[in-house]
Length: 448
Image 1 (cartoon, helix red, strand yellow):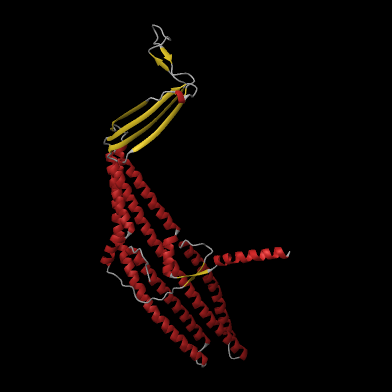
Image 2 (tube, helix red, strand yellow):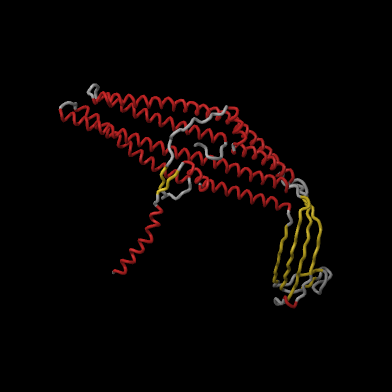
């Protein structure tokens, strides 16, 4: 028993460091969260694979201009030898004679090669594949921008919830103190029962909100962990704050529009898609032209009886030449492909124009949101400071017996509302800054 007990103790000692590390809490700044997401986010990994797939498609397109070689072999066993007409004893005046000869086991092997001297399809196919690879890269950049923005929005949302929870806790402490005072005054016969009931109701109303905030923080952290591509069991602690150190410089509308027009990956992808459609039209037209190739082949063949190829003859045959293939009629498919490619090009142009027009509205909206959220944040800051001063004055007057408990309760509610409104204004301002960076096509760390 002592040996078995020692074994279990040793086993637990070996497992303990790993279980502890799995639940180890990790401190995480906003910039660290963005960098981890850009490195491990699963959506970005899938987009990166799209780039690799497009790169392999470019190699496939380039192969249309490169030589190709094939090695083939064939073995055949004849139960009845093939018939050769024109000679033999099996015939008469009304029938052509024939005879059967050769080996029942036949084998042939050949190596052949071809080189496209002129292939009109090769160039547009290669250009279209290269453009699709560029489209994949632009879409990856757009995904990186979106993921960075989502990470920052989620991170800031968790900070807001944590600050709201902190404010609720402060409010709870103030209301619990008010409840204790009301009970003391009621016991002394100097207070009213309705004041005690009102203070008790205020305390109990805060507790469900705090529980709801705690659950929301946990859900937000799980969303952030998923965005960063981390293990779901990871515990994180956020180290940044909602403090706005300095206002963000707001660019003019024209400047922001031009910057977004040249930097936004989604707009670049639409422009590239229009070029892809143009290459598809060129490809459809090139399919009407002839293909000229140089061909060559070297072949060995033999026949034997009872699979005795070792003692058989192996005559060889070789040739080289040129081959021309001209499509005469393809069931009107080429004409349909040309029209289809032209319509796709027009469709891409319409989508690009629509996106550019929508960008003007987005730019105007983003700048307006940034301006109004900053003004609202400054206003709410003044309101919060005023509410704090008012609460301090009412609390002092209440301690001196000059004002009523109802006035103190109203001042506390006004202070809590002002603090929450300021917190919401800060979040809206920083969210507007994130949208500004996303609109401009910023690939790096969006806000600081």
